[in-house]
Image (tube, rainbow, N blue to C red; front, side, top):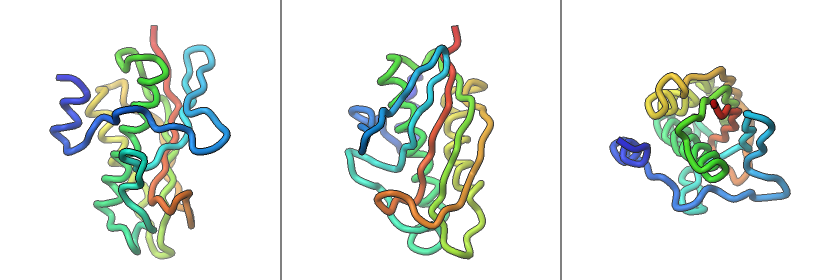
Length: 153
């Protein structure tokens, strides 16, 4: 089963094209076998699927869905750079959660992205990770995730 088919089963879609940079940066920088992937948010067709702070305007489950969408966008950026996900191993995620003052479940939000990557890529989807709460993210999105991945030969 392809990644696209697996995503459809989970109520997600593969983007028609990888998200473009929204300022003066590149979305993926390759150095040797490592890929440094810029932060991705829950954008679908160029529009934020969710906005607001988690624990205030955004529920935990909606934030988890935002994290899943962000992970799909990260994979699409890698696919756009190297043409395949076949030999990709996720090394590390850094997840940011725009949080209400009394919201402390940032790891649970980013777990949704971690779980999806492991489901889609198997052992190559397992990774080191940090989940950080913040007071605000660009475009008022609730989640932004960046990734370091490795191309295995």
